[in-house]
Image (cartoon, rainbow, N blue to C red; front, side):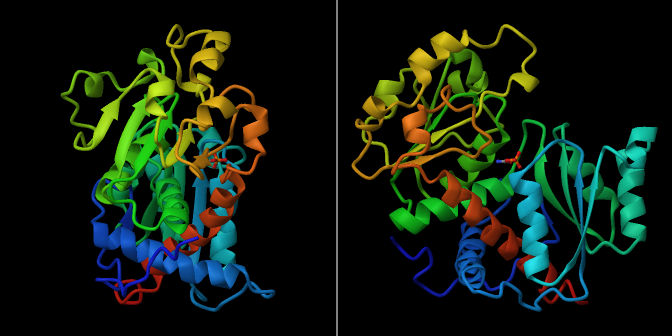
Length: 331
Ligand code: CP
């Protein structure tokens, strides 16, 4: 296993950044800083008493208007380990159910002195609305529609670097429902910044069509390619990342049958043997076990799925710390 951050980071703060909305505006230095800080946070997570006073007196509010297990719980856990006060709000039971707008919900939380709002929303771009209008509370995008999921991509990058060291020139295959995946999109930006080669693989109807045509502006296109044949895509891969089929975001008719999907795009033991020896098998979760991954792999030695979850806590601790503990945060 390789330490992600051997050298001293080129920068020591994310300031003046108050928001994390996607990785498309993150520099390589900022990514290195988050990953290096994540390594320190993993050490805190490994202690018998998992508590440090770094964010004492800070108020974090989580606003999850779409379901979540990993992201919501890990942001809450991360804030509490760092001694922040964490207050959780979901759509159900909040005044959003009575029709209160997202903007007015955000302004309300800010008026209660939230230092940071961690939000998930079904609509792409929703966190940008709050980021534009809230003058005091910072915003972290915990997933917006099919657009972005930056903390997931950072924890994925951390997990890869922990095992592989530098990602420069490494081959990462992202398989499945790329078109609906905010995880894939943020990973593509993060992996591109880290110098990896990304191959997107899946049914043509679930791949970004503009990228297939070679003229997409929503994705970086250097070092990103598309291959619909999984056996070819996986050949020599350092990382194999399967994505969840997001039936809830499909208008209908976009997918092949589950039977055909499983036959052509399921990651199986035979297919994993085409990847490099010791290749990492990843999935952001939640998974449709037996569809995206063969069950034997989902719980086998190559999978890093639970490690991704653990690293998610450390990565979110790093993000909260870097956003709330810098010189701008206490000004
Ligand atoms: N990977 C991810 O975002 O999982 P949750 O939906 O459970 O948060």
